[in-house]
Length: 256
Image (cartoon, rainbow, N blue to C red; front, side, top):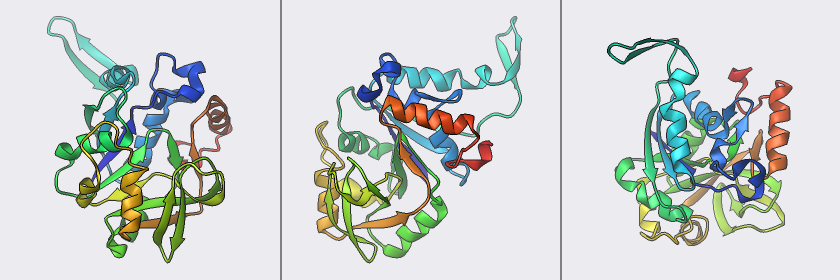
């Protein structure tokens, strides 16, 4: 199952560190948010990623092109140009998709269709950390039999709020300020979801597509009561780095 990550954000609310960097490359410790997200999926055996790039997508490409030699010792034969990495290497297969500077989330996902094919896939945002059990999430999606499943988080937030009845979304309102179950990302999507996405750069996944899926009773909600955070502001970056420095790596205990 492929993992699609929306990685085109500008990080306007954390401009202290994103003037020349895309939001997913903001650091937690010495690694970008995007790396931490990919490690979450890797822990469950998912190693094939599709990164949907936008603002400064070249920086994300550069990071992964340079990743192995920057993070490992290596030998280089200057006569041939051959380089041998001395250490464990990641088993990631990454497809980098340039989806446009100002393309909205639905338009970006639609552009990934040809790389995903006729199969279900995982989707998340490039700024959210969560300790959700992905195997249980996928099994829940299969059991419900809907086109889409979203990880629901109980919170008061500016994020999209869901009304849920017996695991099925009955309403979806983006960016309210009320207590409720919010869109925590970490989706499982069947290929039929592409019928709900318009092929234009102004299609916002969290607006018409998710609302239409809700109306059709095709959006299931997997309630997650564990750790979740969105890194949306500079303060969020400082807070998550404080957790990292204290060894409180609840989103990925394997990194301790």
